Amino acid sequence: MTASDNLHSQVVGWAKVLLPLAALVLLSTLFLFARKNEEAESIPYTEITALAREQVITNPSFSGVSDTGAVIQIRADAARPDLEMPTRVTIDAPRLMLDAADGTSLRVNAGAGMIDSAAGIAQMTGLARLITSNGYTMESSGLDADLETGTVTSHGQMAIQAPFGQLTAGQVVIHWAESGEGQQLQFTQGVKLVYEPPQADAERGEE
Image (cartoon, rainbow, N blue to C red; front, side):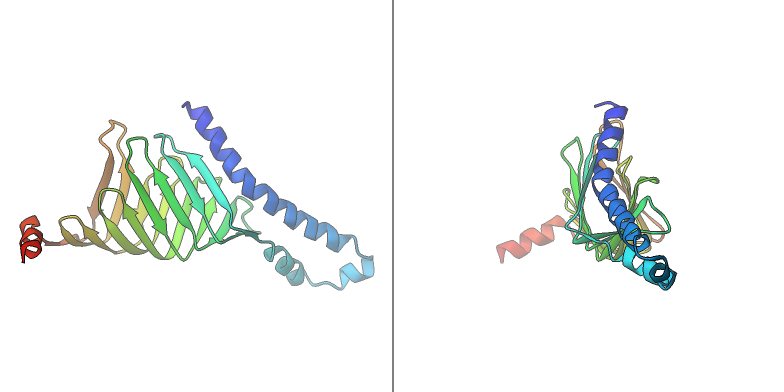
């Protein structure tokens, strides 16, 4: 798949949500200006803004392909346009799914989020829970997903359950190497590990 194909699929994915939202905002504005002049003049600007903010799409789905060939999907309970930033959409209860070309994957659930189609970034906020296909479960106050590269970067400290024990780290970056080495996890900023030897699990199973 070429870079132009990737860009096209991403543009189509974002347009499926952004264009309907923009149309709803435009229709609400046209409705207001279609009223008599005296009625329009009596409507405060704050009410116009409030009406536009009420435009919601339920159960939206975004999809695209990163530069590394990973398929990225984002689903949510609802999506709303950002009036100040037309390229942004706020989303409720987002679920991010990333499936890399090498077979590895990750899943993210969060309380809220935002997608910026111009910057190519999805931001998950609130309590974000991330699970990787190679056995890591992580929780943090939020994270950013680069929709062009597939790189995921955490916000602040994370609590991590790893296959070999428990970790805490100030930041975690997950990316996929171009050399085909698969999913790469980088733990930085005050990493602490409580190691659990594999034999301990085996001994508990024999009891």
